[in-house]
Image (cartoon, rainbow, N blue to C red; front, side, top):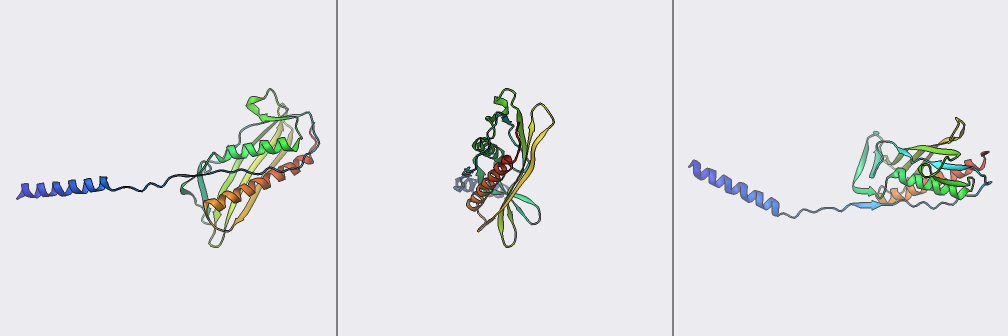
Length: 200
């Protein structure tokens, strides 16, 4: 009896195992989203100063995963949805394009590729997420930027740029469009601040 019971149990376990292995699993592919801001800023008075940009640091939660935060302050991530590149890299490139477009500096590049630039830009991505409430959704972007003289303690610019763009729906597509708009707002605000600065 015991042998028969063991045999039957073994057969049932084997059948369950095989049927589980033969079941086709549905794998959802990853979706990648890109941010491509349209940089349209006014030019200012040109100078002979050069500016080196150090890649922006990023607050720990913001990487390739698409983040969202509810009113309970818990940060979560969308499944199978990612940015095509790190948010800090996207913003660093947008800043570089903006600074070049303003024409305020004779040369703008990555600090590691320049020989003794006159000024250095550093910064941090502090917010880069969708904020979801019971009634609305919005994209939040917060970036701290500092421009200092490379061989001195003088601060040319120190400012925290913040944008909150309302969204019609909570979706990766709507969030991508909204964060793109927020980044465009930031580039315009940066160019306006640069216009009023005395760069020597």
